[in-house]
Length: 481
View 1 (cartoon, rainbow, N blue to C red):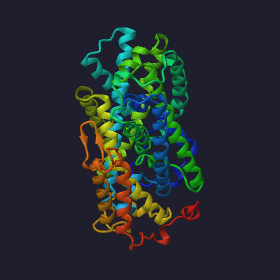
View 2: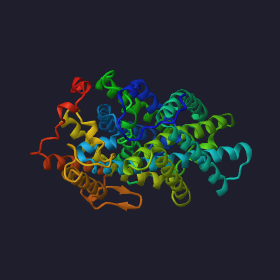
View 3: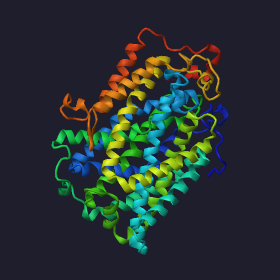
C-alpha cells in the first residue's frame, strides 16, 4: 500500500499522475461502503414499520434511481482532472462553484459523523460483552476519539492510501458480512416489527416512498460531489467514458445495495425496531463478536476516511490558502464534534432521516444543473480557467459576472427552496406536502424545479466556449464517447 502523503488539493491533476482505472473506481466504491455507516441505512425501512419485502423493494428502487442520476457526474471530473465542486465552476462560475463545495462539505460532514457514531456505538457494545467495558460516557468518548484519529490518518495521506485500504476492505468486509448472514440467520423473520407501531407515516405508499428516499436514493446522492475525487485520477486517453460510466454504475450499485440489504436483514433478525447498534450486538452469537468488532472498526475507518478526504478537498476549495492536510484536520475536528452532539442529543432514526432528506433536497438541483452543463458543452472544458479562484486571480471563460453565473445559482436556490418546502421530517413538514398528498417528493420537485429554471433562464445563452488552444487532444477524441 502506498505511504507517501498526497500533495494534490483541488488543482488540476497532470496527465502523468492519472494512473487509476475503472477497476480502481469499483474497488473504492465497493470497499469503502462495506461499513456500518452504510449498513445502518438498511435498518431505516424496518424502523419505519415496513416488512421484509417492502423494505427490500424500497431500498433497491431508491438506489437504482439514485445511481442513474448520480453516475454520469463521474464523467465530469474525467474530463476536467479536478474534483466535482471545482468542475462545477463551468456552470456556476469560478466563485459560484462554492455552492457545490458547501453542499459537498455538508454531505461528507454528516456521513463522516454518522459512520463514526454508529461504528463507535457497536464497538462499545461488543467490548462490553467481551471484556465488560462499561457503556459509560467516557467509554464512548474514547472509542469515538480512536476512530476519529485513525480516520484522520487515512484521509490526510490521501487518495492512494485510501484506494489501497478499499481494496483490502472489499475482500475482508465481504467475508465478514457473509459470516454475519450465517450468524443472524436463525432468528430472521420477514414480518414487520411490531415494536414500530405500524407504518411511520400512517399509510403504505407514503412510508414506502420515505424509505426509498431516506434509505435508497440518499446513498447515491451522497456521492454527487465525491465521484470526481476518484475519476480525476483516471485518464480519458486510456479509458473511455462508457467504461468509466459502467464502472461507476457497478461500484455504486454493489457498494450500496450489499451493505444496506445486510442492514435490512440484520434489522429483522435482531428485532432492531427503534435502535440498531444495541440489538445488533445483543443478537450476535459469541463467535461473531470479534468479526463484528473488526467490521465496526476497520470498515468505519475506511468509509469515514474517504468522506473526510472529500471534506478536506471541499474545504480546500472554499479556502484556497489552506493546504489540503490542514483543511482535513479542521474538518475532522468539526466532524468529531458532530458525533458527540448526535450521540448525546438525538435518536439515530430522527437524526439520519432529517439529515439525508434535507441534503438530498438541497443537493439534487445542483447535480441536475451540473449534468445539464456537461451535456451542453459535450464534456469539453477549459481546465486552466476552472482554477482561476484557486489561484486568487480573475478572468477566464467561466468568470461570468464577478465569478458567478447568476442564472445557474438562482436556479439551484429555487430548486433547493422548493425541496425544503416539500420535505417531510420527523420534526418538520413542509407546506407543499398538502399538494403532494402528504408524500415526500422533495428530491423530485427540487430536481425538476432547479433543472427547469436553469433551462428557462439560459435558453438563449450559448454555453461558454472553450478556446481551441485549451482543448486537449484526448478531450476532442472522447467527446461523445
